[in-house]
Length: 373
Image (cartoon, rainbow, N blue to C red):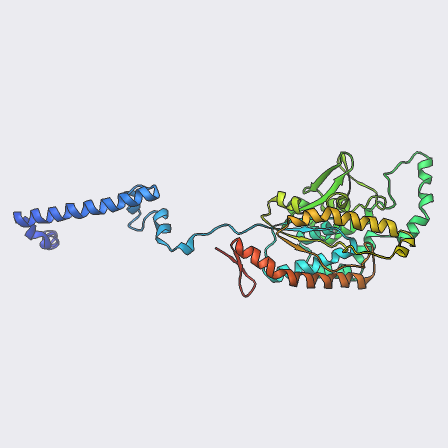
């Protein structure tokens, strides 16, 4: 039976026993093989692979050949890494919350956040997993600002002479009216347990602060989140500086209030900056007869100067209309006005953001899903 089977299998080749047919078949086989080998050799030289290896996996080709066979749509480029630079501005920083909310709704991914003062507080809490809805509520119910200012400023100033009494007996705390420890505790309790160390956050984050010991700008990107936020928002003269290990930090807004360069240093290739400064306009001279008006004006002028340069190197600069909102206002209406201003500002800026991202390969779908090619 095996002999019969072998005979049947060889039946199509019996004619090859004839010399003329056999020679012709061999010639055609050699010619076809030579042509095939030449094609493989050409492909191999272009793709830097062996022509033999091209068919070693059963005819499907190596990964290089399979990718070459696909259309050009399969070639991808990395999407841009998006960073937010959130500026300081006290209660005006409530605008950051609604801007982040609208970026979320548009499907725009956020890879890095660098923030100063209130920008650090909002950005840090968000990076730790606190939703924009919860952040809105913290501003509206005044819990955040009341934790920041545990005692009204006028009362703290009134009792300031009493605070000097401990110095008479040798106790010498750092200069400032507030310690900020209650605020740090509030921040600590606002984030989940797994979000209390900066290096564990879901979004890479840095709080910008000024090291007053050596005068350098610091990006606090490791360690306890609440302590870093306390340091970044320690307004000189109002809050005592914060010691972290062997360094002493105050509010980063003294030198870098809008940390665009800092978020680029973290790795962002496309930066959206949010400035919540008041716009500078000429005001009547009589306004400066009010207590504290001169200092407030000087702060506004200084912030405008230092923020202008940073804003110019952002890919998109957003500047909500927050004029008239006090830095340390605890009025819910001011917080709501700042958040409404943020909503309006991001709607105006969204076409510029989408255009800039599209130019770098990130295209936002109709449903807000980010696609890139």
